[in-house]
Image 1 (tube, rainbow, N blue to C red):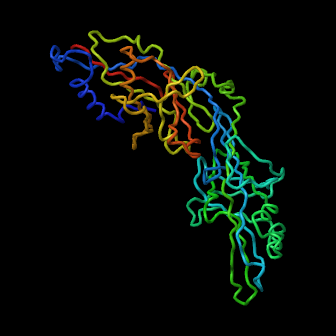
Image 2: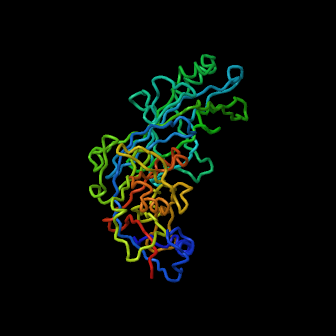
Length: 437
């Protein structure tokens, strides 16, 4: 993969010329004329990357969707997503209707989105909960609830996101479905409580070996169990009644790094050098994995003769990937935050020349290139200038997805970043300095 150099070329040129004329160089412009200066480029400053694991729990019951699936990676291990939901009751007049007969009972769930491979068959397992969820209760990614050992239903299918219905439909076994229908007709099921006594709820799991997560929108007006029935007249008119899911379905996310290079991460203070993990570091919020960045020799780099000042400082981070269609997109945005020995987030690193905004970079790539050229470019001019002047400490930084960009979906996105020794994608600190010509 070629180096990601041209994304901001025009902006860079403008910044350089602007810095020459108006940059804060701590020199007297009346003594040195702009045409007597020259711009030099330095990219030899050492940047060290390491992976840290900062334990984190987050609410998943506030999301409209539940995730089901798994992702296995030789470096980050196994991530598993299980969904949990209970059903609500819909008031109806079924007991008062005459001349109707049962047809079928179908579990219907709208697709929300997918992450990963949807070209192969997806194996869905649906278990019954041992007790219903409390409607509207708060649940976190670290939580689970008890469910039956044997699946109630097994179904394999290829996700059809482009279909007209955009949903998965699973027929419930007739014996169970007819029992439910009978209790509706007899009024034994006539409330949320009696509904929960019968169903309790569902646990959604997957045994698919493929790297894929499916998100089902259980808050949709079309998601729930739908009863199909007909009248006994010659027309046999078809009817249906939907029993939706209760509010507050949630997703459990588990991670197993056993047997990987990252299994040594046990405490928040641990940090694994990128040199021990195939010259790469990681950002994967759903697994609490982040990249720690240190620039130990920032104040000791070899400055050119007659050095006058720093015009522009850019930190370039390149994800290790070959194609933007690889089903594993990196986060749309990453931010830099000062951290400590506990790898805690202290405050945002100031960005740009003024330092009035946070250091946040958007993932970008050059289209129509034979080899992928992509990356994140952070403007750290203000921060680096302050360190060079002794106005700020040279503190380590943590690379994370900004909290404002975090959703259940974005937490699944991962960035694998190359260090300076990586053969295809490398981290670099690019300094553009002014010296006396």
